[in-house]
Figure (cartoon, rainbow, N blue to C red):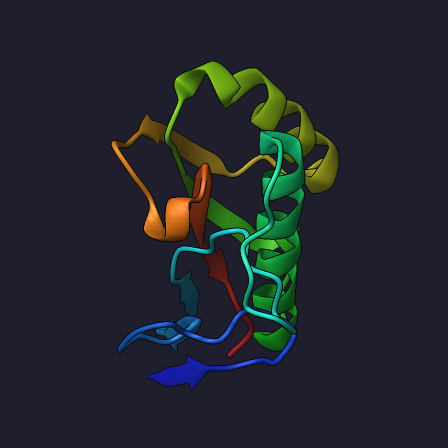
Length: 126
């Protein structure tokens, strides 16, 4: 098992890793829309927050040496399911031809008042 850490994604704000590689898979921690350099939450629309979350996950995938084409599952947490279509449009554009399995759920609240959190599982080369 290998713990990942990259300065291109927000540092962990608790006792966890940005991601863990185990048995050929990357398991990421949930990413909220924090800017890695400042650790400040992106304020604004669901689109702005979704873009930052995807950028943060890009960084963790790159650190693991993998990509969206090898993602097998994503889990999206939204504080308002009314934001689903806006999030989904950006998600689809960002992933290109990748089509991992996905769950999306509404939650009561997310850390630091974020509107979105996303985590994923991806294959990695051993």
